[in-house]
Length: 95
Image 1 (cartoon, rainbow, N blue to C red):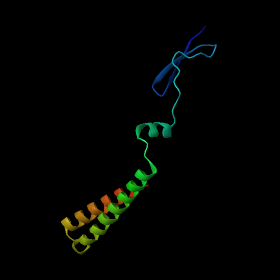
Image 2: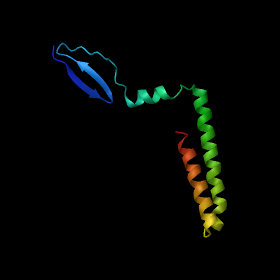
Image 3: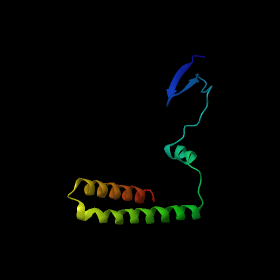
Image 4: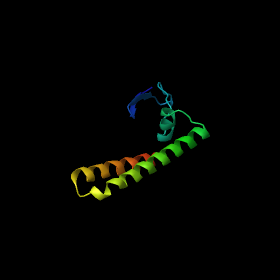
Protein backbone atom coordinates (compact mmCIF):
# COMPACT_ATOMS: atom_id res chain seq x y z
CA UNK A 1 0.00 0.00 0.00
CA UNK A 2 1.19 3.49 -0.77
CA UNK A 3 1.60 5.62 2.33
CA UNK A 4 0.68 9.26 2.44
CA UNK A 5 2.02 11.59 5.10
CA UNK A 6 -0.36 14.20 6.45
CA UNK A 7 0.38 17.00 8.87
CA UNK A 8 -2.56 18.34 10.78
CA UNK A 9 -2.02 20.86 13.55
CA UNK A 10 1.48 19.63 14.33
CA UNK A 11 0.52 15.94 14.54
CA UNK A 12 1.74 13.57 11.85
CA UNK A 13 -0.58 10.88 10.60
CA UNK A 14 0.38 8.10 8.25
CA UNK A 15 -2.54 6.70 6.28
CA UNK A 16 -2.77 4.27 3.42
CA UNK A 17 -5.28 3.38 0.72
CA UNK A 18 -7.32 1.25 3.12
CA UNK A 19 -8.11 4.27 5.31
CA UNK A 20 -6.16 3.14 8.36
CA UNK A 21 -4.27 5.57 10.57
CA UNK A 22 -1.20 4.69 12.59
CA UNK A 23 -1.74 7.61 14.95
CA UNK A 24 -5.43 8.08 15.54
CA UNK A 25 -6.13 11.16 17.60
CA UNK A 26 -9.45 12.88 17.68
CA UNK A 27 -9.15 16.51 16.79
CA UNK A 28 -10.45 18.62 19.61
CA UNK A 29 -12.40 21.78 19.06
CA UNK A 30 -11.45 25.04 20.70
CA UNK A 31 -14.11 24.63 23.39
CA UNK A 32 -13.02 21.08 24.26
CA UNK A 33 -9.44 22.31 24.75
CA UNK A 34 -10.76 25.19 26.84
CA UNK A 35 -12.87 22.88 29.05
CA UNK A 36 -9.92 20.52 29.53
CA UNK A 37 -7.71 23.40 30.67
CA UNK A 38 -10.10 24.65 33.34
CA UNK A 39 -11.52 22.64 36.21
CA UNK A 40 -15.24 22.19 36.32
CA UNK A 41 -16.98 24.49 38.76
CA UNK A 42 -20.22 23.97 40.60
CA UNK A 43 -23.11 26.35 40.12
CA UNK A 44 -22.52 27.85 43.57
CA UNK A 45 -18.83 28.47 42.83
CA UNK A 46 -19.76 30.20 39.59
CA UNK A 47 -22.22 32.46 41.43
CA UNK A 48 -19.56 33.34 44.04
CA UNK A 49 -17.04 34.14 41.30
CA UNK A 50 -19.58 36.29 39.46
CA UNK A 51 -20.51 38.18 42.63
CA UNK A 52 -16.87 38.75 43.61
CA UNK A 53 -15.84 40.03 40.17
CA UNK A 54 -18.96 42.21 39.93
CA UNK A 55 -18.39 43.74 43.37
CA UNK A 56 -14.63 44.19 43.03
CA UNK A 57 -14.97 45.70 39.55
CA UNK A 58 -17.67 48.10 40.71
CA UNK A 59 -15.67 49.20 43.77
CA UNK A 60 -12.47 49.76 41.78
CA UNK A 61 -14.37 51.71 39.10
CA UNK A 62 -15.96 53.81 41.86
CA UNK A 63 -12.52 54.47 43.38
CA UNK A 64 -11.30 55.76 40.02
CA UNK A 65 -13.75 58.64 40.37
CA UNK A 66 -11.69 59.89 43.34
CA UNK A 67 -8.96 60.86 40.89
CA UNK A 68 -11.25 62.91 38.61
CA UNK A 69 -10.57 66.25 40.42
CA UNK A 70 -6.81 65.72 39.81
CA UNK A 71 -7.13 64.43 36.26
CA UNK A 72 -5.22 67.40 34.83
CA UNK A 73 -2.03 66.25 36.62
CA UNK A 74 0.13 63.40 35.36
CA UNK A 75 -0.20 61.39 38.56
CA UNK A 76 -3.99 61.92 38.76
CA UNK A 77 -4.60 60.94 35.15
CA UNK A 78 -2.34 57.88 35.50
CA UNK A 79 -4.10 56.70 38.64
CA UNK A 80 -7.53 57.32 37.09
CA UNK A 81 -6.60 55.33 33.98
CA UNK A 82 -5.11 52.52 36.07
CA UNK A 83 -8.11 52.16 38.41
CA UNK A 84 -10.65 52.55 35.61
CA UNK A 85 -8.95 49.99 33.38
CA UNK A 86 -8.38 47.50 36.21
CA UNK A 87 -12.00 47.82 37.33
CA UNK A 88 -13.27 47.15 33.83
CA UNK A 89 -10.99 44.15 33.33
CA UNK A 90 -12.17 42.62 36.61
CA UNK A 91 -15.79 43.35 35.70
CA UNK A 92 -15.34 41.65 32.32
CA UNK A 93 -13.98 38.56 34.07
CA UNK A 94 -17.38 37.98 35.65
CA UNK A 95 -18.86 36.78 32.40
